[in-house]
Length: 324
Image 1: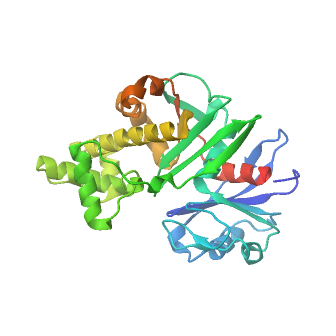
Image 2: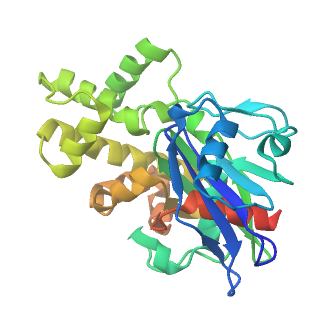
Image 3: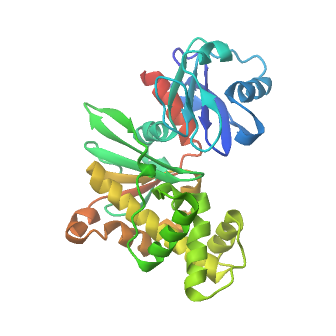
């Protein structure tokens, strides 16, 4: 961003899609994004090839720099996406892309930057006390998609200090016989089972399988997308119950992270989160969130909100670049 006349390129790169856009600072000081170019991550072997495809769609665009939100841990040395085989070397990337400088950050760190900068028009209240996000303390940001993203930020002298995490890779802890069955099935396949194995788009499959086995039912749908579609539309009772258990598990795990982070608010983000808005507003989600025994009263005081901005990853990448 920098001066108004100079644009940067921003990208939100996940295991399924890589979204690119132009970003600049508007007259009011806010980040302004172009219409994103959405590329399938699997169609390109690496970032430079996807970058070239993006630049071909934006003739004449000469970015002053770039900021990329990446679905995976971001460190000083070479690293890769968690759910795709794209690899990144921060030292060589500017030359590979032909830009002066590149800002790299975790995708949910980018979303946390965006959440800190969003107004109430882009945050929908889900449960708990009404009102905008607190102006002090810590905010947890969590969202399922291809994987599960988790970050948090705390306010310090009016500025959001963002902390990326890989909290989605902690061990999944069952709390019911159904969870035991889900864990057992995933353990047979993967050995160690992280929270992300359950709270991600593909997690709906083992949830439905465990329900079907417990109740002696034959699933009408076996692919994750079909289960999600049928369950969210209420077209198939088994898929519908799988979605309901996913929602309750998301509420429970979001509550766990609120406790771990000492959060004063929790924000649900991600494309899947937006599609689940109707379900997140139902009592079961909040009941699972506050079900923390002696800490239930404290949990009731934590507001939960949903990100409604269409491209929080791109917005957050732009804001992180501006704050570097």
